[in-house]
Length: 282
Image 1 (cartoon, helix red, strand yellow):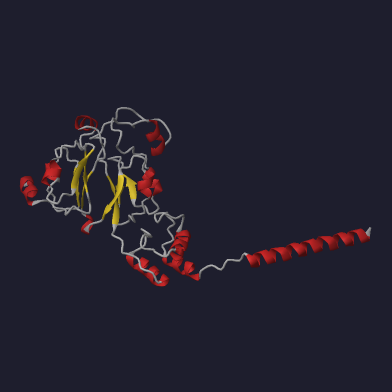
Image 2 (image 1 turned 90 degrees about the horizontal axis):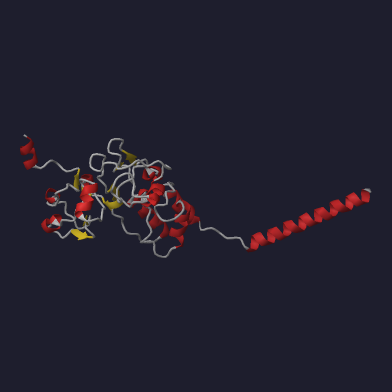
């Protein structure tokens, strides 16, 4: 009996030793030496893991930077130009400077402007509500107000205003990671060029219905009248599908378009009050 036990122990031990040798040989044969620069690059990244770079986390983005011959098109929206420049220096590659961007909510449909026609009684999800029907108002393009964009933001840069029922972006906290843009099923959030003093002019509407229908559903909807297009001296405004759009890269912030808009769909943000307006108010 003891001989059987001893033999069993010897056989099991031999099998374990053989398996260990096989694993050792396989590990040696298929061992991959990781480029030490990946660790260096990852240390320079913000560790936000927001996915704004297009990769599932900072580690994956660091590997992409190290393994790519041309990194000019790779960008971490959360990192500064200085940080990306340091990464380029580590890799001995060139990378272009990124222009600061900020998220903008293109909807002015507050309860005063876009009254409810029904009440949604379903899952608290913009995606689900959007897939079911047009929403609680008559506008099929406006914000649904359930805050899916807020949940998607990792930087606490967007909040729902309880009075307007619309999301508001905190420019100083926004990193232009694009998470809120992707989260919005209506596509009302856009990344736009960030100007000095956070000044911006844009059409706060994406409704492509004809003017009369759009205006009926929302008092501040763009009605596609084209008046803003005619007064823009820089050809920064185009009109397509009944909707005006201001190109943030062509716009010189001259402020000639906003006063021409009959529905106040064009917003001027962070500008000083014009002298004529001050005189009229006085």
